[in-house]
Image (cartoon, rainbow, N blue to C red):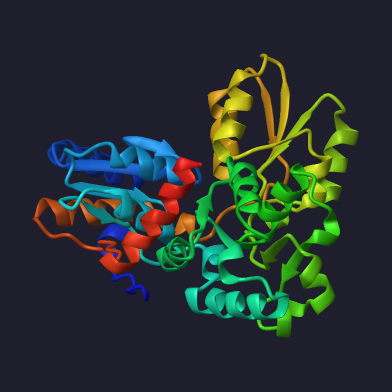
Length: 365
């Protein structure tokens, strides 16, 4: 699937002062309330997050929105693959809108259907494992095209909170698991399940046999695509060690998209929702050092002034998520007020059917 380019919203919106933006968005939201649902990912800035009707991580938002059938317009303040998931799970009469079409996910873009399919064939030929005995698992942070491929091959998607359960299911199902696009989530889930390091291989894009030997591939149980989240890759073991030396009482909690070396050193590893739950449930006066996107860390700090909250690495801003700004949201709402739908995300039916199978298998697991 190819994505359209973001239209120029014009200088009127881009130069508008924050106070006017807030007032106009609030007015339009009230005007369109009967037909409108605004969803915002936890990584969005508070200037946008404040307008959300539903908040959460990517799949939670898409699943929650799918339960609400009386809203015609679903505006997803997130990135492209999230809006695709919402479109796949939403009803036919609902239209999913992405405020900024350039809000993509570099990690999701690291695995295209064509590349994965080629590697899949090469992997089967090299290992001698029958196609039906290789189970693909894709992180929800992937395109609808990739999810569709996984659906066709009998595989499943996973989230950062259930990756271990899905990987366990996949291992029981066949001889080999092909996990993409995030190598670190796959490695951390494999580590948690006690799979030997030599049985977890990294498949490097563009290299013959993924840069592996035949011997290595034949003893592998899990093969990982070499994708990664550029935000969580900014966390290093040295950051964890420095905070632990500074305050031994601090709890370090990191997202499982971080390197395995970081996850091993941290006190806790968990999804976005798990991080929020852990901090919320903790005692007043506790100290948290959080390894994930900075907007969420800053929000938690504001919500819990009775706790000390720091970012493991302060530069952890998601550049594509931050492409979506209040000006883009107002532009969308102004168009809807004139019965114009712009930036609609529509997954072709043939792709959506198999992508939904991929998502449904995860929910069944």
